[in-house]
Image 1 (spheres, helix red, strand yellow):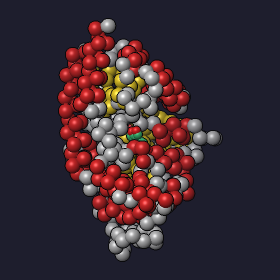
Image 2 (cartoon, protein in one colour; image 1 turned 180 degrees about the horizontal axis):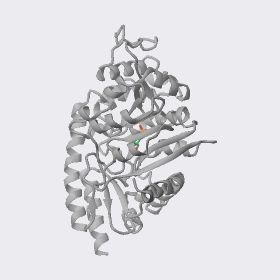
Image 3 (cartoon, rainbow, N blue to C red; image 1 turned 120 degrees about the vertical axis):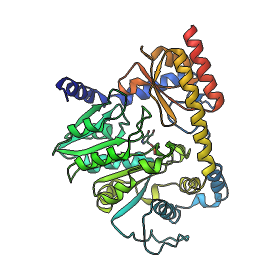
Length: 395
Ligand SMILES: Cc1ncc(COP(=O)(O)O)c(C=O)c1O
């Protein structure tokens, strides 16, 4: 990789830790400017949430168990874990699935699965478990930087952050990431599909990445958006996590399942990796009963998932036309959000739309002011976005 490119990436790394507060402030300003982010009538297409809401089966599961909301999810959490283990082909002894206060039956093999308060808790725990070492962390840029940001702000951190630019077609370059990995690498972070670009890479590239990391390093594959892909199962690194000692896959119920407000995520990794992050997790009592019940039901709601995917396909076609008409360049997206190059600073557009109650995400979050990330909305929210863009172009 040319020295100048590396210089650029390291330069970005040093400033990346500061975007959080700026981003939060920016959102707040956009929100208050437009009357408050919490206002129910806002078109909130900036956080990659599911605009269709939770699955009807999740809501029914909570409604029919309101008496359980006074209880800790000591049986329901393990039951959800077992359901997920079964879904991912992980075997265990005495798989009864019955309500009981006993912990999840022991697994066969050396793969484990752990629930978290959203996948955010898992990423944060990885930061504490692996981020205090001396060495380096390799990640794509722009990408979902929560883990890298957590490491960068940890007291006494000694991990150098290596941010690897996307390739010419706007995709994560595992070739460039592999070049940046060396014997001091402790963490490699891959978001697939990538946030904010919405692009995905094939499993073969993830396998090459996994082959290239030192034995004591961890490859995190963040699969928050994997369910949007038509062939999600084929692209997923879950089998790698089951077969290799140093790969962890993080998943969440916040995206296609529409449960961001209930905070449920999980990790699949070897028992040795899980035992390293577990001491930093909040533990069983931190999960909410409502979240666990909703997540369990959401897994069965194939209709809701299909509706969400249909809305995404429709929205994607609208984006392509709308942005082309506006003269902007959208990176082809595989998931429920898109990444758009305006060719000029995005601040006037972001605040123009905010004035009309349409909240989108500024590329400043990634130090890329010419870009915006836009999440899919309902049909009427998408209409508001596109009419807002037309008005902006005419203003
Ligand atoms: C790639 C990615 N990973 C993880 C998260 C955090 O998700 P959770 O709600 O499960 O904490 C997000 C949220 O936007 C995300 O985009």
